[in-house]
Image 1: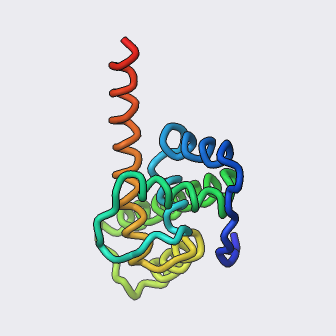
Image 2: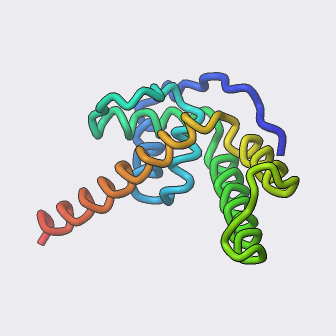
Length: 146
């Protein structure tokens, strides 16, 4: 998979934005939300973001890539993670950073994510907040309906 440069694709229609918001908060899993966040304009500084900002950046990322590409990249990221695990298991839990397979996996990971380690780490961290928030909001909605 070749990563395309990020170009903002604004969702002009409020219905489109609401649709993407529902996807981010209810349908996409944490890995998919992390991929979307990685291509958004979310700052990589560890500044506090409101829940609305976190969701907004995830919506922006999905709008930029499209749902199918977000899901494809998330699947590719899972595959890379699985290869890391296999490599560790084959080598008793230790691998040298300079190992050619580790270097190849690191390069593949950069291709899949389309960003550096700092942005990837921040995206994963915020994705857990967003998906945890979605579960919390869902539970509150269920209680308010009952």
